[in-house]
Image 1 (cartoon, rainbow, N blue to C red):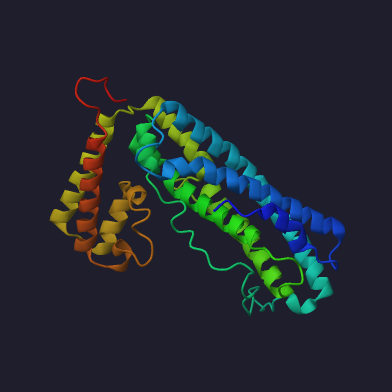
Image 2: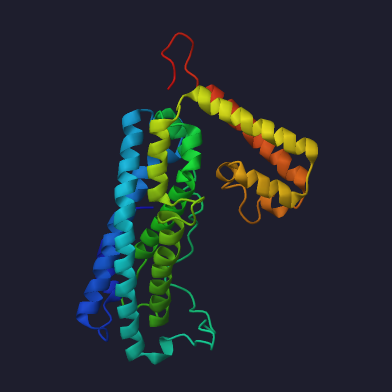
Length: 319
């Protein structure tokens, strides 16, 4: 996802002479900065999205990932701000030369018509950020339950997907004149909105006190790591307690809405962050029994996985 000499496409792709040269340069610089950050983010998270030989398994590797993510997250916030300002100025220049590019706006401030398609072909980014980050950080001496509490995997997945989309857009950006300006207008708006309107507020900054963004989550993870037991035994005790709570819920069989609310308070949101998306088994059914059955299965599998991470007898205790 990071190949394609995207950097050589930026200036020819935004070189619309009707837009002031300074404005074109500012947009190209903002896109280039984000392209470099995108490559960096995808490269540092890639080892943590796969299991098996070569997966990170040292404390130093886990520490390095958190430090790199924190630094990148802070830079991405500023880079997204720069892109938004550069994009607004650039789109304003396009509108001044071609007023028909400006979408119609209704009296309530919303657009009456869709912007239309961007220039890039479809891309599936759903798998980019998926992976056993919690388990790999468990191997790096970070407690599984602490990583879940920090919402780290959810935020890394969201950021990685946006970075992959950005690189895909830059790799496929054609020179000016090859495509209609309407496609360039729509694509630039969509990129800026995806980063500043979604990635920053939903994955870098905090959605709420209960749903931390990447930066707050890393701070929380370090605090939990320094103040609470991070042993595999503590993780197993936590997982068994979650399973016991599910068993209690199963015995009561409350309404589906009650189960979902109760599960969220007990931390199931972290475990089911990928299972609860629209169209999935957990969200598509209104049956409390189905939800409880899925939860019980997931926690049982998680306990088995954590058990498999125990060190063989006779070796040093797992921390």
